[in-house]
Image (cartoon, rainbow, N blue to C red; front, top):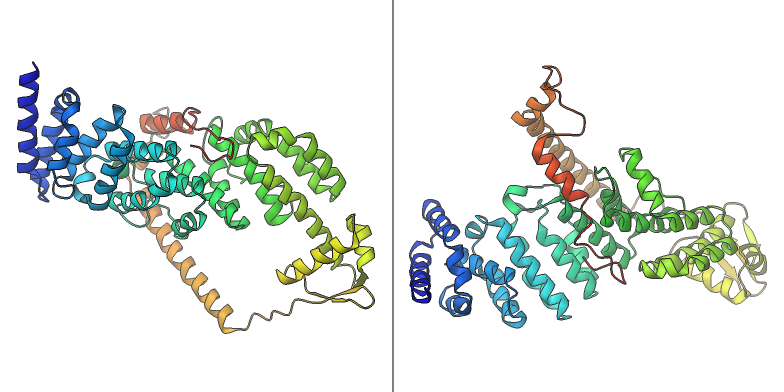
Length: 451
């Protein structure tokens, strides 16, 4: 049996070397051969590394993919596998790997897990970025590898690398071409929100978490619950107000999210009172929960932001105020701390004021910005062009959906008495719905980063 298996393996190698090509028909034939020969690969695990050393990762990308996939599902030796994936992601031919997006996804996931387990997340950044470029049908597509890449960015604390990837807005999903699932999309926006938090871009982080919590679902997944907790805190930091859930979020889903985040709802209520004392008490009473969720750092920033907002609120009432009065009103322990906070806010252009050191008075001023500089005009022009591009994209998507055969069949079904029900779009949608609500496979971890 062993001799027969080895002979079949040798024959398969010859087919990989003979049929690997950029010709579509030839590749399809090789693809069929590899699919039928998976048993041969599993019976010759001891030969896989030797075979990979013979094959070229570019010319024989499809063969490489099948071999790495077999190693991924059979617990490959970490160091060797990481090195092999590095070679593969750097050189693989997009035309070949796109024939098996699910296997490519599994290989990337295994690679990410091994890098994380070896505490070498930073090592995975460049290869995973190559993987994204290889599998993406266009620059506008979200792929499963985006979540892998962002996870490594977070664990290695290379947040700017993550932000660089997030700077381009993605709005295309193609499950057939990339094997992307609802869970991958949720993780992309969840990890993306964490990256924006790290660079203190509260508004952008809010948008990303909003995408997660407003995703259609019957009950929230663990990813959605963790995102909602951060959504509440980031909303306080961004706007100083309670987090408003998007209107298109189902009432049932909103109820489940609030029930799973009672401590955060209480913190939000305490913040709205504008009392730093109440906020401190609430934070301390739920300290253990916030630490366990990995959100204690955000909670402390919320406390500090309330002090700043209380100072900012005084600028709307007074033209001049003494530092001592500000200290007493905002309930800060020392006059020096109040002065330091005011100076910091002036430097960050949160308020416009001047301090008279001689008499200890603070004079508040109007915003000097007239919005007539060349820089501002350039910024407005860029925003207008961005809006025009998005509008054009939305129009194309609307045309594609409205002329889709499946969409027309579903919308016509109720009129024909087909019995279609709201929210159910056949087996494909049911599968997505199940994936969306699957709690397995996501762990918030001590820092809320582990996925």
